[in-house]
View (tube, each protein chain N blue to C red):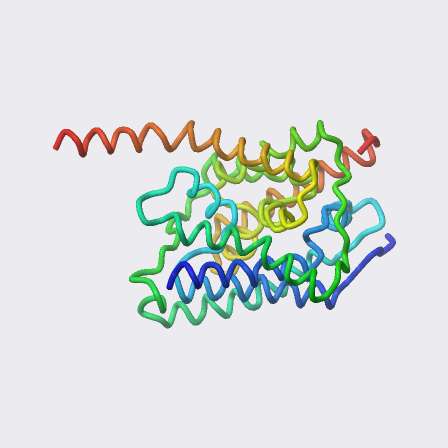
Length: 144
Length: 149
């Protein structure tokens, strides 16, 4: 196995910032920083429950823009999937995260940090199906 | 105050996504592709995030209430039901096809391309489909029940 493009320090630092945002949202507002949950429940919000959700969601691109402005675009940004893959993948991610009550942030970071059995299992499942999908697309189909 | 706190948390979270490189789908796919040249960065991102997040959870467990809210709004379910497993499986397939989970998809919106907007639109459509299929009937029922009383 060859290792390529490994950026351990940026990974740890970025991860710590993701953890910090999650920790403070929990300590300050008592909320889980799960992006799919915050997004999904802003579609048909309960009364008085929308503003903090939109504020968090707006913060994501604003924070990414700020970091990219200050540190430079170290990692780049390239969507390699064809439009067909984007139109197929988007609904799978959108529907799947709502059905499964979470994504990489809600289950993978916040849920595992809480020791939630559901989140640990969900994370193992989506990591596994994602790895199998990439394997099939790159090494079996080969056209991705 | 809760809105300001949420905005700041979103800012820090989004900055973390950009610093970690998880905003680049190619980098995420290079982690998920265990048979190709492998980029282990995502594992360290998860590790760093979990360490700090777990410290927050430990502090929260010793708190009676959040700084700005009345109560902690935490999931309480422990059962492994079909929806959890099927939903996680479907999400993983979509994530593997494109390399963008919801957080990075939204974080990248500061540099919108046609492809990104197409993907985010499709993602929102999928989420909306689930909400329409599951959330609307109970919501409508509770409203009509409230109107009757």
